Image (cartoon, rainbow, N blue to C red; front, side):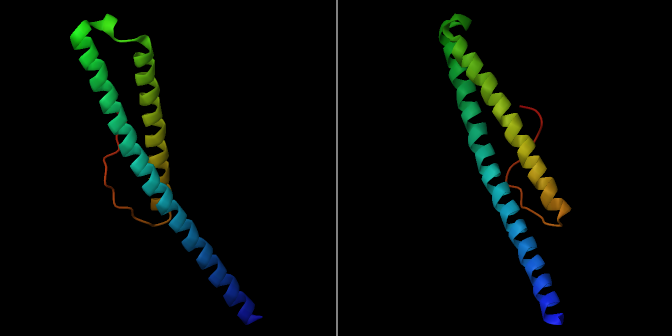
Length: 106
């Protein structure tokens, strides 16, 4: 009976470790996705700015403005997910080295 309790405890520790590993991986992937999407937004804003500079507002296709809005919404969603994962890790007593600054503003 004592052996089965010990195995149960080990099983819980293994499950907790797996959960921590999964959260850490999720956070890392989300962090990299966030970096890529921020870069994409920066490029899109530059493209729109250049088009406006060359030909005024008429030179910017409405689809580009829509794309910009969608990109900003995507970033908000990913930032929210990143913050949620970070909070879950803190709740579990884990620390994750932040490589990027997460903020609410665009």
